[in-house]
Length: 161
Image 1 (spheres, one colour):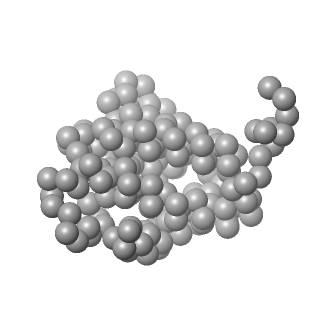
Image 2: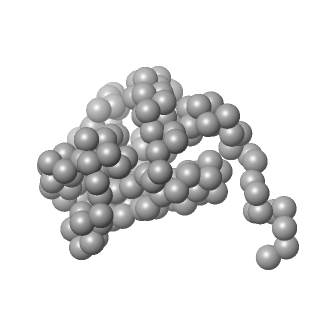
Image 3: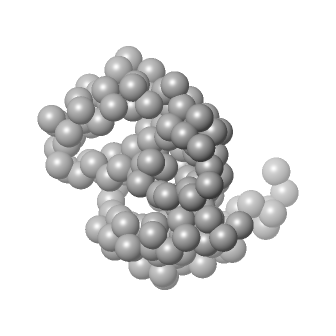
């Protein structure tokens, strides 16, 4: 648990910078692969869309090269969730490419966070837990800069469906 508190502290400044710059962008593209694909998908849909009413598109790193690369513009916001599992090479490929066409790429990389006592062979398994703590900080700043509490919904549990 102490390691995750340290992750949140270190993630605070990049989360703040991202939210301040991109909170009101027209669309957010979130790319993740391997064991971070679920985190990218869930964060785009459940937090950014459902809780913050932001337009998003979640893309797996493999699918990125089958369509999405053709629609991203220079000024679009692209977020990469990079982990430390076997999919890292694919995410490196996405990062290298997207930086040639887009000026607004934000990378949240689990390798940036020290996990004292966790051996390298297990860090990949920890990536979703680390990224969940990073996204918690992003969420707080999106809430703050958007003046939109995470608990407010238009329709979810408000209307019958």
